Image 1: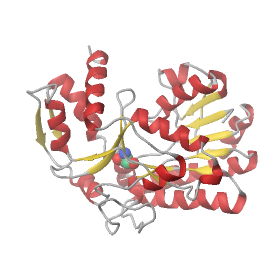
Image 2: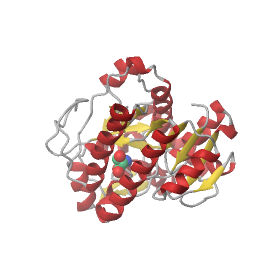
Image 3: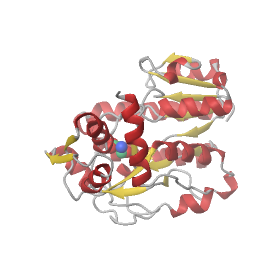
Image 4: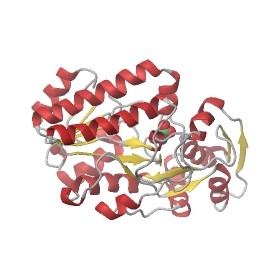
Length: 315
Ligand code: SER
């Protein structure tokens, strides 16, 4: 990775990844792009371009302008948004990916795009979900993610594009909030705990999903992209996870710092249906074996850091 182009760079992952990549590879070697500009470090700390990924010509021109040798394709909508507007989700998630892969092929770029626990479905084994298993998702987001995994593998086998990907769980961070995801509750709960000492959760008690703290997710992307290709048996995409919990467990952890914290429920049937179709916990052994995936943050360590950081941010 010498000259990196990030699409959707002002979103939850990109906004932090861009800053980290700039600190490693140099500010001028990472161009951030997004459909709109917001005031944030990822847009201000180096080159930034407004870019709609469904416009293949504009994407190609930007990649050429910055002599990109790496494309990190983050532009996409998350599960709940995709479920509310499936045609829009198909056009953006698949159209954008196809454009980005074509440009990676044209310009001989290394390529990363995230998949998700959403690539699994109700018939997938729920506990310790294997790397290679049944993938019949019942959401538009899941359909996009499975198709995306297959497409990225296809570009590797057919055209030799160095495509790599991770199946991310819910990602938790205090910098940029996610939007339109099913796992977003696990971010909101911290903001509300610090601000109001209570939270009304749209996911039902007892619903387990995999999660990961953002610093571990960023390290995983960089380590996978830097991994020796000879060691990779898989490409798109590796299961990665740091923890699996249900709402009561995160609340109990928050109460260690904020004893009066109260958790209530008002279940959103749409997002609950999505959550119920996903695994309880996935197995990341392939990632550990093939490129040394590790994590630093468990629920306790993440909670401590989130609450401290948000107390500073919201003061
Ligand atoms: N965090 C995502 C979502 O909830 C899952 O990949 O949609």
